[in-house]
Figure (cartoon, each protein chain N blue to C red):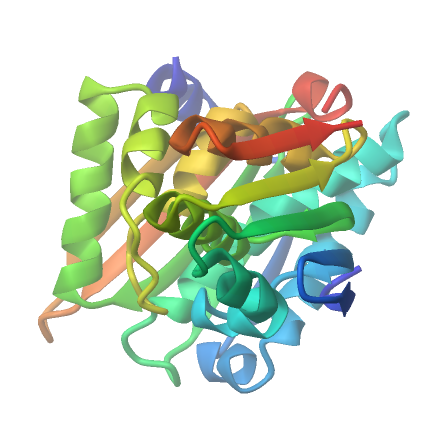
Length: 108
Length: 182
């Protein structure tokens, strides 16, 4: 459970699974780099499915928030898919939606 | 509530204690070990809970956050630090002790002062609304998350020591009833 993850991504979406406890916010570029590239485009749209991420540290929360702020900066749309069954998603990730009206967080 | 509880608990002998004494450098070199240690503590502590998975997820999150902070913000990576969990029956006290520099000590002091004026939820939103991300940025975001989302009672003490650094004590107090429903 300590830190092991996999990412499947294409130009406009990604699915991340596992445990994300990377050592710094910058380290999350490995995971969210493609999302950042897409969200930096005007009117970009990106869907990020993290429902399979069971644990995430605070650097990851910061990195997710930075994605939302990047989307806001460029007027892009960011959809984050999560799970009600995962504590950090239900408790912490859900509150990121307040940062930007076009950051949609859907918890199934 | 937190201060009262903490004072009362300090008079008690814990039912059990587990402690890890470590050199932060070991974790800096192999960051994955933070999660490994957190998972071990969490699995050990959650073993007696009815809802073991829920308790383990919360405990792993709390232990990992405190351990990562102690490693990341230790000013001398070769000086010994510690992670201790004292079990008091209804309460679990998760504690770290390490040395840090004046910048980190000041940011922790500011965090505690801010928490007297604002709720953890308000502070979380305020701090997360500003882009940051320097890898050692001491925003206190993780500690705010523990307080906001995991009902952690937080105590932070920074004592200056002779060489100009600070001895930091961080305690996250969790009520066992709240662990199983999360």
